[in-house]
Length: 209
Image 1 (cartoon, rainbow, N blue to C red):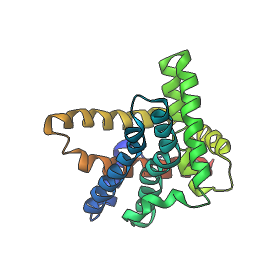
Image 2 (image 1 turned 60 degrees about the vertical axis):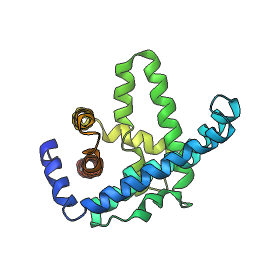
Image 3 (image 1 turned 90 degrees about the horizontal axis):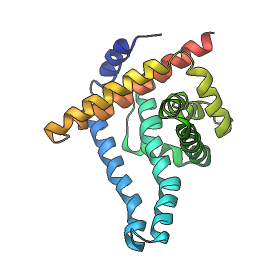
């Protein structure tokens, strides 16, 4: 298993020649995500209908889009060096779409229920579920719950590594505020590549056991 420092170096090497497209992919994804709020604005932000429309838009469009950016697009970059804007729609096909929605909903529900006990258990469980969308992409025959269970198995002994990676991401994101968030144009695609490399390493370790 590579160290976090080594994963970051590998991610930088992968991003070489792909920084421009990485920024474009994340910008397009961000703009599309803004569409999620349109039904709520049209119906009225304070209305019950507006809130219901927002939740529906988030579940059936927002989550698959975010997962398409985070997991599908940058996993392809990690594996075959390909990064295209159309990759962000990779989870909307019939094989992945509904299962992606289920994984998103179950992850939110499970994490929320654990957080009701204490914040720390919620964070730990959230880390445990992190790999589920990657696993579903590689194993479309699994159900959403099976993908989450396998993620929990694979993350045993690796949750602290993921926490430290995410902590670095959050820290740099906060610092970027002082530069009007401009560094986020590079930070987001870079860390999405780091996460993809992390999954590849954990998967290789898990399969070798």
